[in-house]
Image (cartoon, rainbow, N blue to C red; front, top):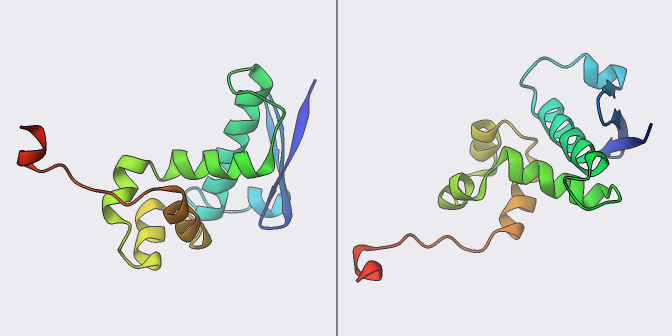
Length: 119
């Protein structure tokens, strides 16, 4: 059985196998919907996808964080709101505030299509 150690914010947050995740006690104690827990859970999904061969491996910590941000802050939802305050975006997407700046860097400026763009 392959397992991956999931680190977030410098802390061991979980051990992920293809069929099971073991959360660190500090993470397990967080309430459902907690931004930190959501980030770790999404990183665990990446680990699972790598282990199953759905995503090219091996497991990579930076790719896990990128994957988590993409899952939790989809580009089509985040990009039009990118100029809102960090705290507002963090609350809206239920992610740790530090992830907002990282997501902004990953996405190009959003340009809405106007009616004239389609003609």
